[in-house]
Image (tube, rainbow, N blue to C red; front, side, top):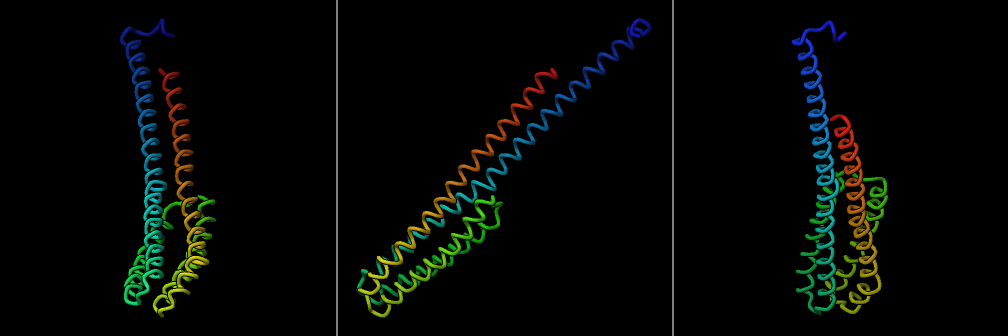
Length: 195
């Protein structure tokens, strides 16, 4: 077949095949770059942003706990009132951050943990509110007792759940990175073989 072809035809065939090979390798490279960008976007949107949100939530819970402790120890109803108002604002702020967190992609394990966290949130806020109610009524001993026997243990359980969610962000991001690395290696091998 090649014997009957002119040099011009042979050159056109070779250049055509090389052009096709170039387009294929280039397309494969673009595909790999796109896959890498999508994986990085997923890690950012589905892991990094939620990790920051969970960090903010933890920070606010620590502030709320400190306000409850300070109110119980203040022995001053006016100070307790100011701290209670600030704590209530912080709780509302946290609920807003939590609502944003819930709009991100959640793995099945995260969905289970978010339900647990939601229940723990309600229990902690209820206990914290009782602590402030006692302090606002001038019953600082009862406030301190409720704080140490009920509020702080509920805070600790809630904090541990949020830390578990935070750890899960890192674990899931590592899995996504490993998947992306495997995809890169596959594309790299196909490119090398093609070349």
